[in-house]
Image 1 (cartoon, each protein chain N blue to C red):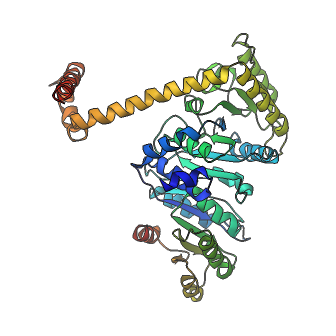
Image 2 (cartoon, rainbow over the protein chains, first blue to last red; image 1 turned 30 degrees about the vertical axis):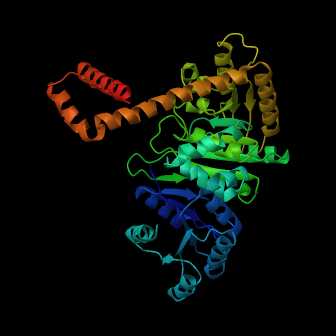
Image 3 (cartoon, rainbow over the protein chains, first blue to last red; image 1 turned 180 degrees about the vertical axis):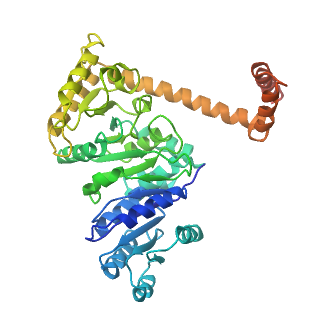
Length: 129
Length: 320
């Protein structure tokens, strides 16, 4: 039996900058995880539907537009609606420090801002998987 | 098993969990597959294969559009390679199919090859069974971008759609054995690119060398990005499929596939028993050293091992 951690890297919202998302997808692949990448401009509904079909344990959200306080909690809520709260949500991108406590209170389990070493992300994944 | 009932009802989360179960080779897998097996056999399976960058995912996206407009429930298994170094993978095929993400009658699942070499994932056949039992009418398997010998798609699909694009080499490439031979339908994609006439001529020439076949392999030109030629393609597939059926070839094909599967199954079952008995994992380094040093020779050593194993098992059978 070979279990693999599967991670969805998704970009909600309207910004068109996916370098960060692609970087993290590649880095997590190099750490031995199976990463599903959906591309730009996904809606919360499509992200949740994709996560369920792909049976991932994690969703990593990347957002640079500033809409994280709205979109991240929305995705957490939709997972709850679909009885899929066992899927862990983490986020990254341009997120001001002052917004992080709000996100953590609303079901996002970790937030990684630019410059975070990949080992921190791996540590997080390994600690909650 | 609760999961069996939920899969048979077509519950999406259960279908996804069941695919994970077969993909991971979970201990409950065999029992699960046996429980749904009688409900399988209703879906039609298309295999889409071709070299990297030929436009397979985009084409699949457009095919989903067409089949959904006919009211069919469609599932896709998209296979991408695992890294031989880390074992990880970036699965990006569904990126081109995300317009279908929230359609409840479309199920898309990415699978990593996990070291399996034939161009599909090792447990693809069982994943197809899960989707079949869950009530999907059409299952499309997209192979990894293939080279010349990754042809296992023929062991899982009713119809193989081979996607080719201009500029892949001269006609000698088309004559080679392997992937060029396995298409039921040849799709020449990116038809607006230079070299399309040459590619068409080469493929037609290659197919003419196959000799007379009443079920001639169709060649279809498309431009998946522009959505050109897709309706014609689906008509061609339907027509080919009905001819496969009436000429009895579909039955023949499926039987051949099941024969292959039986062989694989026997080999893996026997391997498990033998490896357990010989404690292969524990001994393999030691055997390798003995072989390298010349202390033993390969055939006589293992023939003796197998002989001992067989004698032992027949003794056990006698005492039982």
